[in-house]
Length: 316
Length: 248
Image (cartoon, rainbow over all chains, first blue to last red; front, side, top):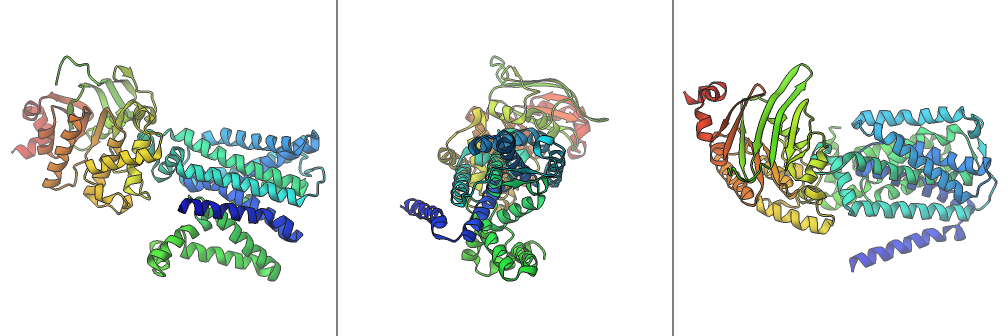
């Protein structure tokens, strides 16, 4: 019974979100597209960073490859958008498979550093490729259809979230969590850790690349610095961690809230916006380092002592 | 124990070098079906290294490992787990952020033959092993909130949930008091009665004598004695290497 109510509420929420482009103004729809896409990126990061415990700073590479795959297919070969998306997704998945194998052998900070290099390398590479438009970038055919892009982005986010839900309930997901908690023990207990890690990164790559493809056609112009932007990766990590890594809805809630806060600050207190944004992040890290979802449970259990406990645990 | 049944496990000329250091050299032994083989030796003798070579955490420099007649020395950890080799760690490796039940469920979900595919059924199986090891009342607790003896039990329950045919126990009794040691000894005998073959590393002499059908003694990476516990423990080389001061 409780399950039915939850499912009904979620369906209603998705329907309400789906109605936004028909009711809201153009700026709201544009804000919505950005928020939905970054939520998808945060959700993708959640699979490798949240569930598997591998803090990737290379997910923006998959996003960038999705962007470029779609753009190259559409601008150079005049293929339809759908084909472009598939091309972008294939590039993202191929990259995750290719780099996942060597990079996922590294653990902890070493993994993070290796992934950090990835996006710089890929940006430099693309800047030197003629068919990718070198430094100048690529222009996609113009298509004005914010409603379509909004619904596509919403659909992708729903798909990503359903995937994460499946991960959270499946044997596969139990394996990922075991790897996060203790990789040596996981291997000895019969988990094919290499395969599981690579699959997790590939899933993340798939969703990130699709988000990149949608963004490319929507924005119609891409260049290396915007496609392989490592600050985008920092954003998705912050949002996922803010909301609750390793939970089904945490990253989505985190992405929506932080996108909203950042938008409000930017429009009302323009110049110092990033300062306030930084303040929000710092406060979040101090008072709820395990994310909003954990805070929800913690506050119900311990009241305001939850925050004190967090501060103590982190020796601040 | 029984000479007619073929051994479940055999090591042939097993050596492990860490650069210049020889941790194990030319170890050969067999482990019979349903046998409890005790492995003793002073600190640094290479006991844990041997367990790691069998479970696949380390790869041997030389030698062969046979499990049910099949060569396994090049197989990765998880494949050996699927074949039916389970181990505990001396330095315990729980999944700290997960509940006790979830910890053991991982063993049931993977383990021998790839484990139980269904998470619900795996959880039920895990519950049974928790009752078996006396952790039934602690299922919802987080693993990192457990005390010492319970952590040992959890380590054991995780390995058992894999339903191994060969169980490698690396000092599961260290740090337990006399009553707890007796409990664990009874538990290990119960596990053997279910048909599991067991290799057990232990420093608690009383426990190892009560448990083992046969004893193997390592010293500086070499096997210096093998045989029935009473004989081995009277062997002058063993006394010199390991028990000299205690027997005084």
